Image (cartoon, rainbow, N blue to C red; front, top):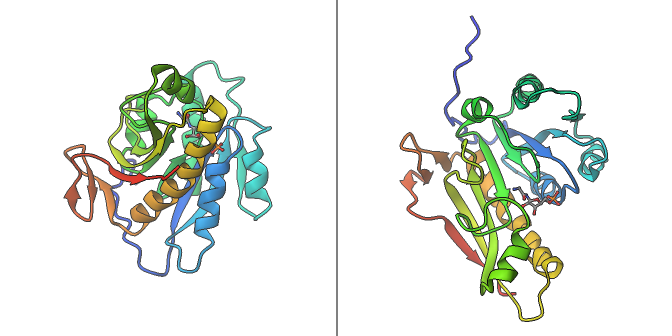
Length: 232
Ligand code: GAR
């Protein structure tokens, strides 16, 4: 009999079998690159087992292919509904049997059924200090608001867009002469630090989504995300 029930995050790293990570992208894949680089260190507790893009021209596909990581393109064009797309996506993922999915610039809204199936086993990185600035154009919106601080958040994915329990944030001070590109570049650099760190914690069994819906690190629920302050 096939067990279709969601698995719990039983992922404690035993030193022999790295966690299989599937990474979903739509574009450049610089966060994917950071994850690949981290996975190539000795004793890394995770390996990038599969990269899926909804765009055939995503540069991240090349990043994966040049180090021999299997890739798949699943274009959203041709699917009539989000549900149909997500069903096809779920089939690709199940065949690869990942222990964790990392959304890394995957610019699609996922359906509640898909998210529920992977709940507790799917992370996202978002370029803002959530819960502020969900959605798009975060750097420009922060500048327009005159905020002194910006950043990025790694969080568990729930059906609420950019609304799942936060894990780790990098804070980046806004500088007087910033434009969206300059600010975004500094935020992205921090994303490349915090995403591999959170994935590592998950792969080591230190990080999980508790049954109360709160993030747990080392068995302790987090009341707020852990914060890393960037100096620039
Ligand atoms: C990153 O800044 C990531 O946080 C953002 O897209 C960029 C992807 O860059 N994700 C979102 O905005 C999702 N809401 P990358 O392709 O170079 O990793």
